[in-house]
Length: 402
Length: 86
Image 1 (cartoon, each protein chain N blue to C red):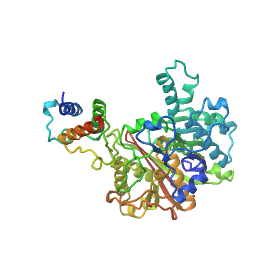
Image 2 (cartoon, rainbow over the protein chains, first blue to last red):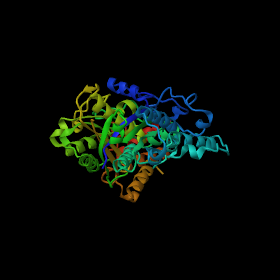
Image 3 (cartoon, chains in turn green, orange):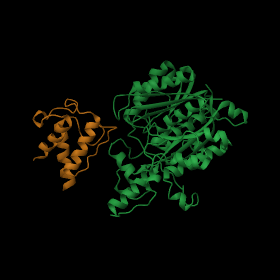
Image 4 (cartoon, chains in turn yellow, orange):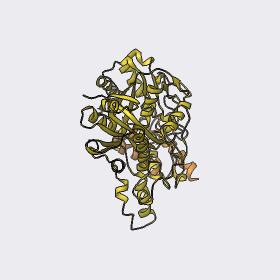
């Protein structure tokens, strides 16, 4: 078994167009959620989201590329560029043949579906652009990353709703740990902030109209976000040999399935995933200083997640910190675990724990240290990143300071 | 069909019961309707009567719509129809 480290990170999300901007916003507890801006937003009941602002495809990508890149692919390529450039890697020969890309997305090119359904149903057109299919397919982003960076090893896309990125990163971790690949590019992205994407979520009646306030007694639902997070997972000796800057170690992971309900979370399923990640990483529960919570801000998730943490950590649950950065960037659905991994890296590397903003009233059912409203300085040696998806599919990553 | 009978029919369908087996004092829990069934019922009611029902599944008790039993749901819908159709 090989050790696996992260040597590059990139992102685009409502808090920033790169990692430094995003971490600065997390340190300052800034909120990236605001009024949504797209066609037909006036026909929605939910009008807020963590929308990426000022990210123009024009100028960034050429005409040919734009006809092939849905917004989720655009975000992914920008994040991948930042991550791979930070790592200093380039891929050729045997190394390129073995290294690949595993990304998560729940729904891929939603806005491409949306735009083209609008054309044929609403506008009555009988012809669509020839690249609709390659643009909207869920693996488009992973494919374009592989093409742009000459990654010729195992590449695919994972879809497990809100846990997609964590499941994807767990796969990439496995491949590097086992020696199958020296380097894997991994993470995920999502871009559902268009009329059809938000309308679908509205139907569930779990969306907040005003803010995402995880763990706060007056929380009233989730808020969608969009964007991408991409990382370079590299074998430890490979990274050391070339003198790479190591951001942190990926120490272990676990996945579990509730096998219970299609939308309601399960304490047991969440607890098994967290406990499994600790076992896999060979760390004791009391070594964990920070958990980046799934923390959606819904009634159901937050109390279930807190109960699961209490079960797994016992008395140590009261000593660790747990925060939900969804309060700032919104819920990126399939991309959320990737962007949230940045908060774990910040805790481990910079000793700064991102806050749960919008926290107004304590909830006895969420009586943990949720780092309310203000970031905190702390030495953290082990962090967990939780993702618990609709469908009862859970994936938790364990990270360690190097 | 009256508003009351139509609502009972919708609730009965969710509960997989005959409308005659749905009592006005029954709670949704009595009828075996879970949170997902409730959201579906509200959707069916909105479609049937072409109204908007103010209901947030995160905070059912704080929503401006009383779902404590079948009668309260019917009364709420009658009120919403009167408000929204006037």
